[in-house]
Image 1 (tube, rainbow, N blue to C red):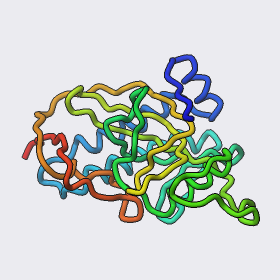
Image 2 (image 1 turned 180 degrees about the horizontal axis):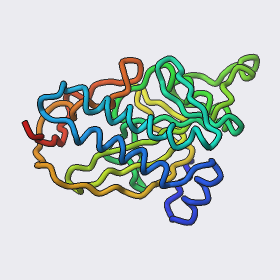
Image 3 (image 1 turned 90 degrees about the vertical axis):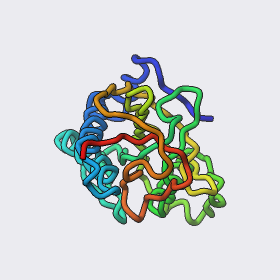
Length: 231
């Protein structure tokens, strides 16, 4: 059963427990969105999502490294890890349920083996076991990653003109490869934006997750909201 932190006081307390602040997380998300929004139709289609993902992770690191966190690149997955508490964070695109209490978000794209392993470790640490694999044997428990991995999920809501986001601890991956179960969800404030013309289109949303071939996937059959950019 997931626990959701929504009220400002409980969000602040939970983030403090993790060694974080809401401002640090929102600044990183804003940096990613700015990189995405500065792309034009002349840029390669995959670039806006890649830039958003890369800049958000970079922003996290630049804020957190002076506070006792470290860079870890685990099989092309960029993690920012606190050297003492072993809290690990990486950025990922979520679906339309991201940042909404009472909904269950999923990652926008299927995830690769690094995230799968992290989700399994989270599940084992909490005494939960995801549907994607059987519980580890007793002799394997010592090999469970001691890091507690969290995903900073982001979703661009083009109709509401906001970026919604949350910091959540994943414990399950569905048969489609998308993370779809969470032990804890910290609902963050939304980031408003304006200035682009919006239209509906078929196909990918300008580069999707942007997290590289090891962790990304395709939503090619979905109806997506697309921003028409300047030429």
